[in-house]
Image (cartoon, rainbow, N blue to C red; front, side):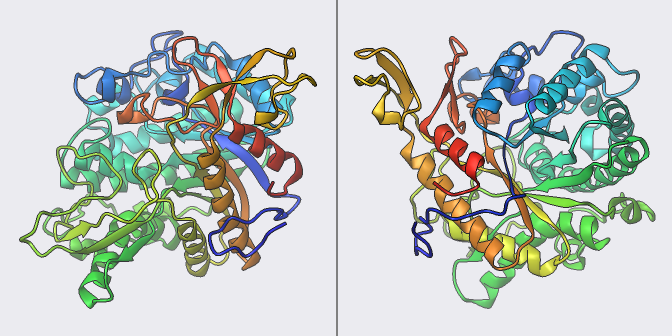
Length: 498
């Protein structure tokens, strides 16, 4: 057992008995079956089929083919000792145009998924929206218009009625920051628009959609579930100790964090956000009763964490740095913040180019606890992409490949495929150590979901980035648990950091 290591490489740490270890995925990234059983097109179908927008021209048409391999994947989750599974429901699989009657085949698929999880002792954690907006709604204005939020409330009623007796935790939105700012501000994500005002309209209508969905779910759920939203809260640090750089941090914190936590948890938008963006919009799309709708009590706040940001005030002369972790696109994901630049940080980095900084997770959890001391938290995504390599290990005389810790068996002399992803295990160990340190300081942290269960369609990066603890061969669709999967399985089985 090792503890209190300065590099966060502890081992043997004990997590509470009721602490949940799970894994997470998103519908468009894994399901495939894009044109089957009544599913309508989403903005990501349109975006990925537009030449030049996704690496290698990749699409989610097949992805991991989870739609057809559901039982196999459920058995895989069980074999990895997952206590919970966070999945998202594809809105266009339920309502092909985002409105009207439910598509029964879509409901049936998620019913089989939920029942399969429960039968295997895995808690279903359902996300209503992980970015795959029905294209028909985008054609009407998407998240820039109020009617999309209203349609989302109707959609929540449909799925809440169908599954409201079985889902353990309902999460309304995943990372609305990405939906708003990358989708409508920079254009790096679907629908690929670059409109500073459109991005801020999307921020508000996503917040409103959350409130309407919570209200709708509470009307129809019958099993006393927990209600949640997942935010990718930014850990923003100043490049210097100057007052100017401190103000750059404040501005990015307002756009990246408080634009969501303010209305969701305080019941008001921060005044400095309005001041910073007054040249972009007058915020007249915020109606008088909206904040009351948005400010719904939630049982748990989901926190996604991958890296930190370093900012400073741009001098206006030198080339402006934009190392915020997102692909360059048509516009900026930071409306009204043209004076701020994101500085490249020292490594090491993941394959996404994101800095590895476990102290940032501890810092974030403590900061959220300090601002919202009564709010339980859940780490709903944390993980890393690395350039994994498949090796073929010889099986020893005892029939086990020693290279994978006894996880692969076969006849002596045979060779067994394996992925020895030591960098990912190291990443997970360090961030789970950070989570444990936050717990030890009184943070009400309820669980941890590793991103991702499987390699998948990584949005505008296509299949070029692998986050999974399970490797997917995109030609054969064969699943291969990596060393990190076996490591995480031991953790989930024992609640003890291996």
